[in-house]
Length: 486
Image 1 (cartoon, rainbow, N blue to C red):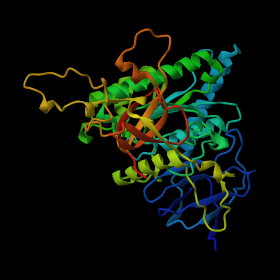
Image 2: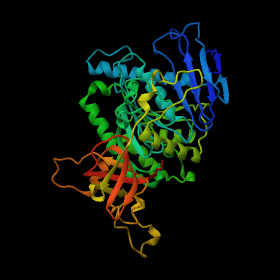
Image 3: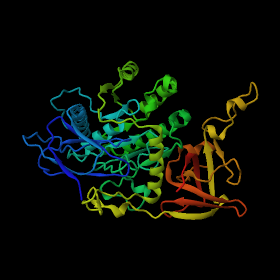
Image 4: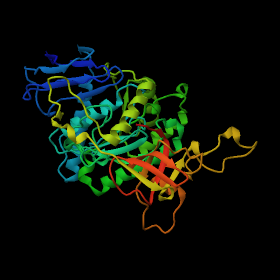
């Protein structure tokens, strides 16, 4: 028997709920002709905030549609403290920037807001401490943009390697968003990507450009992260240069909490400021949004207030604190979902064949286990794990390898430790280059991910698991700190 309830929300309110592990909830809006409410949902150890606002040009009406909730949340309530009006106002400002950029692109006369109005589209960097709702804000602003009925296709960039974004944790990536982002579970926090399987969700089959950092902690190798951020920025700017029509939609960047953390949390102020500057430079940022952090807002105003716009915005009260153990469980879940897909069981009384109106069978994958020779795949390791600690160096000796120096691994060596390791399969090298250097692999995006499930040293064989069948032999891969077992 299903548990169903109807809620009537007033303006400036949010419906919030908490779910126990292994449970789900279905929310249905009955009247699509009226302005839709804002929903904030968070599990006992997670948060997902989605705005269901319709076309931003629609005027409010006296009626407000009820929402029908099916399932058994452990906690549910309506809050009248919401920052959604602030987020909506920010969207309206960004929409004006896009319109001015489009008019300038087409050579139209300037609008009434002045001859000297800025005609750059919004290129937004979102900063904030841990558990401040940065990812939710990124999704809200992105979804507002694609719902604006202007055929915008903004770029959404995720620079938090602990999040997983469209593939697996340990990556940073960017994707063009053309339809609202559907996030049904922690396995796909930014929607489903077409690169993880040939049968991704039709509504948002995103194709992200992904770089492999290989670690959830940005402080483990900030030099490498700096380089990858700049690589991603180069590709984004090149794309915008080749497609000015796409450029006017702008971009929105979600960042890790370490960008806002001070030395007290173990983060070097110099390294985080260097990474923020890398973002500002690489993506040509013109707006910084600081979520609920006065000190960080003051820092950004001091460093960038004269060259771009810095705005402090409130944190939602619906954000939940996520602990380390929960994040590790999510990482394992994301890796499993990358290989096998995911099956979401709806509450009793709701059709099990649909997830967000689409066939749930599209989310189920059949991974391929392949046995290859040890020499068929060239494997590197990058970063501190490939080097001896500083305390082990002779007195007065300096490192001969940098923290970005790739180290070639011998799978048969006991120090390789490849069993159960996640490998990023890289794009092919540029065939036009006559000379090749080791660090060039750091500039290659990832095209897929594998897991080494077993090693047969006597027979010089290795078994790898991948979500789909594809060419592996002769490829180049990088390992990281992630391990996964079924």
